[in-house]
Length: 287
Image 1: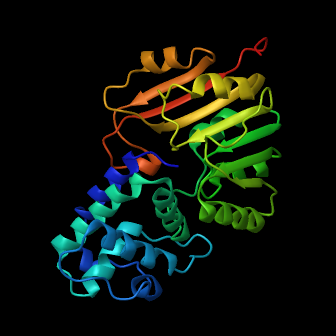
Image 2: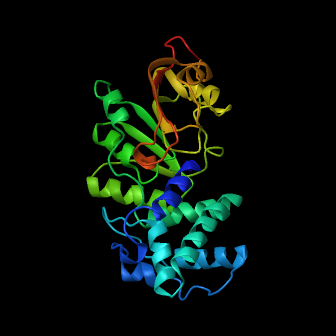
């Protein structure tokens, strides 16, 4: 449920750093998964079938272990004798193909999370926002591996999180058990999840498919918050997004903090898409 900008960063990463064949960090079980890749020219269907076969055979990395999906997929191709240019092009095609259906998108993110993808520390914006708050009910929308939900639970919050990736939910539950905290983790899309009305003291939206200017979400999330509740948001925006646009768009809520940075951070570090961060409050007399 992360935004498409993550694909841009992933593709750009293939061109950065030392030659792919020399880069460490892909365990043998990851490189060997799925059997030999097809050689020569491959159609989109054949390429996606190969990616899916590789993905479904991958081991789930334990603890804080993490490897880069794109680099490991490309190294698998290189180890089979496919030249570096073709290998990189194949992964860029995978990034395009994955967005064509929800099933492919889910498989792609299941793969990233099975390989331990994404930052592990909670958002500093969230840490600061809740530092002086009394714990209550919190919703982590598009929770990934649960970094924000687990931080909140460790501070006494009653946390529910959801993600459409089954691997994300499994990873979040495992991480919560390891930390000795309780969270409720649900497999769901944004659209299917029942956000409720006047239900949450805090909602966290961190690098998900909910864009900062998407039309449906200000009213829905404002309704879901209890009066006085906070929305903590951080994610990517289209180039040219301004703080004035974001403030107008989320007018049902009162902005306590709003920043638009010209470059990527966190999930999108190294990218050139703007980062939008805000903390907004539902009026105490709101419904």
